Image (cartoon, rainbow, N blue to C red):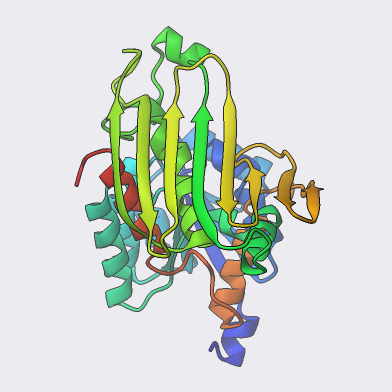
Length: 330
């Protein structure tokens, strides 16, 4: 538990990488959370860093990562850079002994994810991963239905996520999300990690998994077509299909049980639907304006010793293991 001094202390954050994800999803969440303050931001382009700091009313900005990490007026670092840099910067933050939150996925590989986790664990420093869906009310409601046995014993889960190639994909313009050197699984790394991590939150750890992955379109170097099947420790079976060269966007998850089923999407704000012998229940639960707000507030509660953050344990490393197994890297 935190002591009284820690309870009243403002934790000063530095944001490493202030791209799109920090504009609305995460950056304002750190500013809105009681007891948190964004002290400084860093972007390699000093002009863009200055612009971001001015627009978000942040006092300091840097164009050098080491300067931000080593700033004595910063207590914690939020790493919001592309995944291929998470390991490099994560180890630097661990070395100086500062609290850290890293954008998902923790790293592009299980090996790097494990090294990051162990670096913080060895020094007993809090490490969080931005798998914020674990803290969103719509998914907490689904977990409540499962815990209340609303669909009986869970038997299976399946997820189909497809989308058509974007204009950027077709143009050949650079996108780090489809660069195999940055994200070997392409959009799978960026998107599927959210769902697979959520499934372990809802249904428990995955103990066996296999998959096939390839590039069907030839538009970029990363994979664009992935299928997988897995087995949770509870005995629940799972299967997934992720294809990023399909006719249209589709995001459908179904959890089936002995007495009903639950349907929902990972990324759309559609209704979550419970179907069982009592009938059908549809709930529309909106996300907060800043979608990482509950995640960041839970970081604060964790640091105060009031509750455990759902993404502050080994779970993010396990998700990286599942991803690597699906992509055939392990």
